[in-house]
Length: 246
Length: 329
Image 1 (cartoon, one colour):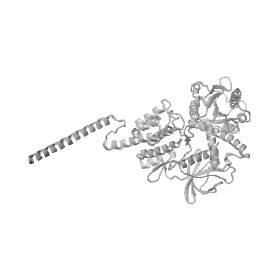
Image 2 (cartoon, helix red, strand yellow):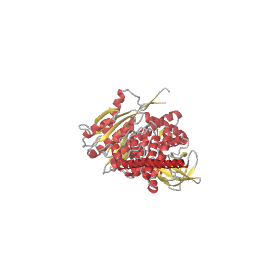
Image 3 (cartoon, each protein chain N blue to C red):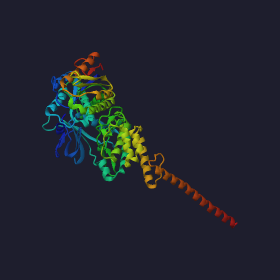
Image 4 (spheres, rainbow over the protein chains, first blue to last red):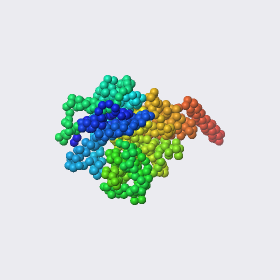
């Protein structure tokens, strides 16, 4: 039996390569160690993302066990919810696989089970995905080139909250932008179950400056940690789940 | 998560034989049928029978879909999804990871919109009525279809019957809708939540009616409320005006069950037929044109006049007959 902890995700929305601070791929790898996945969405308008930017986007997701996708701004809404859902299932599958290995004692993953049993395990994963508590930190790139994409980003995030709030489990959101007004990263929305409140903040955002992706991810991880220590949750090895006596 | 990489794992050329690791059945690929976010569907040959086979690199989504199809097969007489025939893994030569696939009944036919193009829009209502009956059965079993759209609907056989081919979005009632397409999603239009409930599917049915009349899907305009924009579209389109009441009720989430919507759609279609034949307004439907009311009223008045005439005539004849009888005495 799994007792539910919470699922921690960072959703990074950007349109290019970082150019300030530490390597975001390394910070993403660090995130994974702390039980946080980083999902990356590259947004295009009429421009393209260069080879280096592409590599970084895929690299961040891969290093943290997250999902990445590059889309045109028009398709952003659908992509954001798809990526979030996919990453949730992926993480939960990882957790369930770990459980399976403990129960069956060997290197067994879901894919290696006969199709019939796989179906039963999948129902457990589905059930968890529906009921687990989800914490999402949204990191929005506000460098100059993002200026005209921000209204679309806002729409997509409102749409995401619509999808996630349809779940039975609880959600908590927080929004950071980078670069901030004075610092590399700035928190614009503190933990809240209602992502809708960001529609008031978004029009006030200014764009311009550098792209400190690495420091932004680090700040997000720390925001999770603060929260965790406040509630004195979970040990290091069991980031998502505690085992109950059952 | 590169798309080209994703497709390579399940891209198979015609003639390839796929053999399952667990159940050892062999399928010979004939051609590609469709290509979606979660994999590719091929037509295949199994012991001289045509079957459809879905191959994906995503074991999770395949397993989810199989679970739904299994539940469907337990519903008596259900024709909603294709029936499930086999689930297995394929050890593809030169690849380490087994490729998951499942085999289902091949539903031969055309997608809804191309059928309507060929056979005429008068089929729209009939097929939607069939769809609503099927949805009602599905809802009663505790499921919501989710990603309902013309592309997922096939019209097959003689007489034509509507079938759903992609169950990827099918969700247990009360949970969050798994998969959707913006144009058919009530969340996108700001008309409600993405919680799986019958009214979610019924909104999509209304959008299918709209999409059948206006094949080019339009997007939300920033200025007006989505629901206002849609009702404006319905009111100004001559093909949709006749279904106005049903569509607006479904868009507004006023139908609790598919049967409620079906009843109103039946009413709308029958009043339509009578109207086109004799121009008499039916009970229950709101008159659209002012002219029609007066015409209908006039008709009603002349009906009453007619009855009076007949009665008078009968009376005179009868009176004459009595006079005649009297004269005989």
